[in-house]
Length: 334
Ligand code: SAM
Ligand code: SF4
Ligand code: SF4
Image (cartoon, rainbow, N blue to C red; front, top):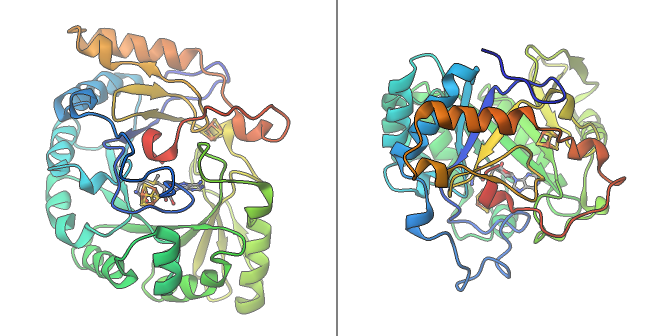
């Protein structure tokens, strides 16, 4: 059964935040002045168990869900997340299971993740120059550790994508080195416009480098880019082809919103469903789950939430009043 929201958009994709904790403090996501030593992360008893998450996924399979993405916070920091992949894979042999990670623990876990049934990995890496990387991710880890993780995935044939958030005056200088490096190893880098998620990252329009601006920078170095049509509905990245045949992607949520095709729901680590990245409130599924609701009842509850969905925040950005209580990316799951 295909389930559509009030704008006719199907529910295809579930992003699951498995933890709100992270080993980095990227300045655009979890700035240390807000996420310091005294920050109260979710208590263990509030966080969904793997069995509870698997029950929710199972209740959504009959509704047409096709993709699961594990995210966070840093998903590889949650103990034995491999077990969750195994449990979801046991539900369905064909469903696409991906993970979004900062890559630091990738080399350690990639093989077990693949063996458990993970389909692919998206690594977030915003700079190749170590100093720029360490400053914007606010970490002492090095770029080389992440590159080793990516290389290891390639060796074991676990498909990898690389995402890179570009901020004005921070890391535009990294666009060309990133393309050069990843094109050589046949990975398509995707550049993301800095978004106004949450309320702690001091976002403003002036800090956004638009897709158009990024393409100008790339064309100066590599020659004209040619737009490529997307191969499936709901694809968030706009793909462009370079003169040498390599591809580069852009996720232009600010200047070229894709709400019309948005088929993603998000499940926070504490078990609330959010129907938009910019939502201010979620729908608490954990409470019905812990009242022993059947899978069918959970599926029905989420169906009702999805049917009532009307979100299109990015299409209205700038025309609607900004709310101060939008949830943080590390909580809702990127
Ligand atoms: N820790 C993992 C990681 O960094 O890949 C998974 C969670 S992180 C919140 C998911 C994605 O959201 C990352 O690619 C990150 O760069 C992106 N992200 C976080 N804050 C963002 C913002 N304000 N604008 C654009 N992308 C953002
Ligand atoms: Fe952590 Fe990912 Fe956010 Fe960086 S972007 S602070 S790695 S959750
Ligand atoms: Fe989807 Fe909300 Fe982003 Fe629009 S703003 S694409 S509805 S998550």
